[in-house]
Length: 116
Picture: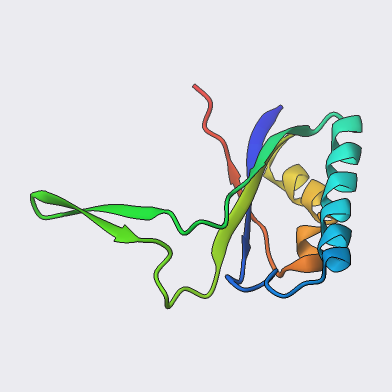
């Protein structure tokens, strides 16, 4: 089985202003999906990223620059990632079709993990 990263982007303000009940409903959807994927033997791990903006480190000519990240003009941020196991990319797509991120946001990016 190959491993695939499910990258979970969302609008920077997606969860701002949600009531505690609404936010907990979102969390419950994700927890239920993880529990089912674990039971199905396809869930290999994941992480929710903090809401802190982080930094972007880039090379500029001979030097390195550090910028606040994400930039103000971004339309989405990476909120987290999950690792699943699947036979191939098509199977990973099928596993992700019922992911709650598609209910609460608009897309998931799926990338195969390069294992040496």
